[in-house]
Each structure stands twice: as C-alpha cells, then as structure tokens.
Amino acid sequence: MAQKPKVNPHVGRLGYLQALVTEFQETQSQDAKEQVLANLANFAYDPSNYEYLRQLQVLDLFLDSLSEENETLVEFAIGTKGRGTVMTGSSGCTGSHLPAVSSRC
Image (cartoon, helix red, strand yellow):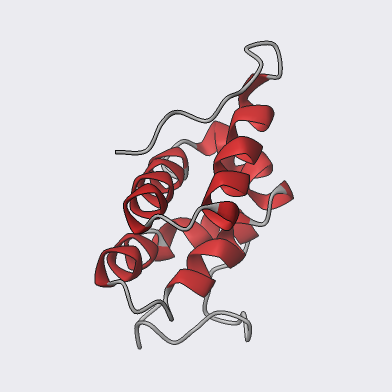
C-alpha cells in the first residue's frame, strides 16, 4: 500500500492534490499508482475540487491512463470519464481531445 504523500498541512487542498499528481507521475510502483489514481478519482466527485483538478490537468492524467497495460488503472480512468465533462466545462460530445469511450453523450 502506498504511503500518504508528504504534504505540509498548511498547503491546503491544492497542495495535497499536487502531491498526489506528483506521486503518480514519479512512482514506479503499480500498487501506488492504483491507489493514487483511485484517490484522484474520488476527489473528482466533489465539485469543489474541479478547479484544482483542471489547474493540475488531472483529466489528462486520467485520459493517459486509458492506454496503460494495467487494467485497474484503465478501470479507474474510465470511471472518471463522466467527471471529465464537468472538469473541462464541456459536455464531452464536442471535445476532439477526448477519447471515444462511449458512443453516447
């Protein structure tokens, strides 16, 4: 199991999310990547996090995870597809940068 990112408690939510993104990008452990991506996916369900997630380009991280060989990472990334439409501020139907995971918008 991955350890919690070492974050100064005074940096707030943005700092914590940045630490998660950094950990995901730097770790070689597949277990740690799974746990971090699951945590980021959970944060994506709270609208108060959308601006932070946009700022940190977490949607791109989820989209990149769709091409991973690790099926768990792909499942977590697919689970956030609906959240991506909110995080980008679009319906997801016109965004050419979004993968065609579903034929229905």
